[in-house]
Length: 129
Image 1 (cartoon, helix red, strand yellow):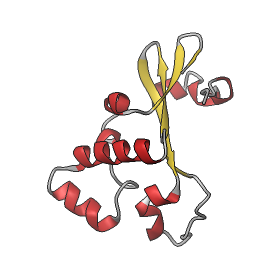
Image 2 (tube, rainbow, N blue to C red):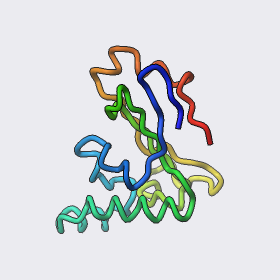
Image 3 (cartoon, rainbow, N blue to C red):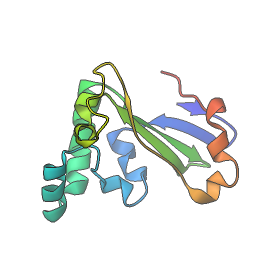
Image 4 (cartoon, helix red, strand yellow):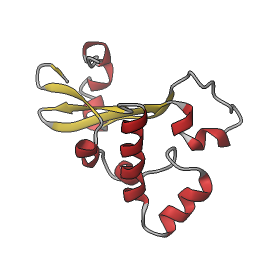
């Protein structure tokens, strides 16, 4: 965890998953292949599938994201993972991704905080590994 003036960066963990904004907390676009995604959404299981994917990814590879908080309020996040944990990547024309790569899946900063300079502070908020 990195602390700054009213800002901190933490690894994405199961207990922080609920800090992702809607609809990101249950979005499984990258986490499942297209056929499984459709079934998960139709069955109302996407939030559970996101949690299951995160749990598995944490056990297999480690942290797959970071969340930035401003004054203890979630303000943005980024997710990333190796290709074997990102089945949707295989559906893109740029596939296959090299096995030793890490795919940037999503990055988001709350719009009201981006306007106040949060999007430009990443070099000062590097998390410690």
